[in-house]
Image 1 (cartoon, one colour):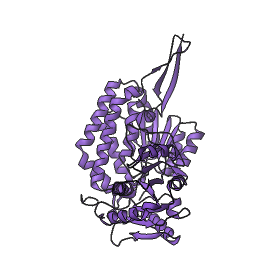
Image 2 (cartoon, rainbow, N blue to C red):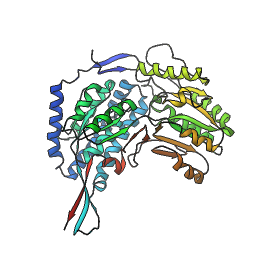
Image 3 (cartoon, one colour):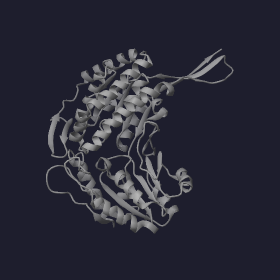
Length: 455
C-alpha cells in the first residue's frame, strides 16, 4: 500500500490506494505542461474566458457528485461541501470576467514616447495544496493563473488524490487544451525536485509552517517566485460594547466551520473581562446544541477529523492545555466507535504559555482568554508568531478602525468572520507566510511585470 491513499474519516475504511508516479512519468507531465504553455499563452483572452466559464458550469452541474467526493475523502459536512463547490464556480467566473482588467498594460508617462508596464505569464506553476478544502484551495490557484496564461501542476495532499484527479477532469470536461492543468500523483519527498526543474517557473503552497519553510528554501535556491499561505492562530477579540449574540453566532461559525479544520478559523477567543463570563456562558450553550455525526447527514454540524493522527494530535493539545491550568467546559474526550470524530470542545481560563494559546489548534476546540481591557486584548492578539487573520467585535466602528492597523495579520474583519473572497487579496504575515492570492494581487503573483520603454 502506498502513502497516497484516501480513507473515509467517518468510517476509517479505505476508499482507494493510488500508485505514485515514477520519475519518468513525472518528467513526462512536466514536459507536457511546458509544451502546453507555449500554445496556451497565445490563446486569446475571450477563448480562455469561455473555457473558464464552462468550468464553472461543469462544477455546478456535478455539484452533488463533487460534494460527495469531498465529504468522503476528508469528512466535511455535505452542506459545507456543496458550498465549497459553489465557491469554486464563483472564483472561475470572477477571473473569467476580471482577468483582462487586472492584467491590462499600464501606461506611465516618462521621457519616452511610450512607456508602460505589462504582465506576461511565466510558464508551468506548481501548486502544493492541502486536504482541508480539497477543491477550493486548488481552484483559487488555478482560476487566476490559467486565465493569466500560465499552466498548472498540482501536487495535492496524500489523502485527497480523488479530488485532485476530479479537478483535472473538470478542466478537461470544460474543454481546456490537454495538459494545461495536470495532477502529479507524488508524495512530499518528490516536491523539491519538481521545484528545481527549470521548466517549472514558480510554486505556491498552502500548508504547514514546516512545509512552507521547505518549499521556500527550494524555491529560493532555484531563484523562483513562491507564495506561501501557512497556518493561523486567528484572534477573535470581543470588546465590552459588542453585540454578544452576534459575536457568539460568529464564533460558532468561525471556529467549527469545516469541522474546525481551517487556517482562518478563529482559534483564540480573547474577551474583555467585563463581558467574559456572559460570552462564555452563551458560547457554551451554543456549542452544546451542535450535533456531531455522519457528515452525509444534512442535519449534522460537525463531522470527523480528516485523519486519525490529526485527531490524536488535537487531543494531545487539549490534554496539555488542561494540565497547564485550562478549564474544560465541554467536550474534550475521544468518543467510542468508528471514524475519527472529536466533539466540539470549549476550554476557559486559557493564558499565554498554554498549548492552546501558543500553538495553532487545528480542530473543533475553542480556547477562551480573559483580557483586562481593550489594550490587553490587542496585546494578547499579537502575542503569536502567526498572522493570517483576526476579527474584532464592537459597536464602535470608529474604535475598530483605530484598532485594525494594530492587529498583526493579513486580514482583519470587524463584526464578521474572516473568510477568503475572490474580490479581496488573501494571505498572511509573520510565520503565516508571504505573498497574496486572489483579487488582482493574486493573479499577478506569477507574472513577469515587464517594463516597456519606447523612444
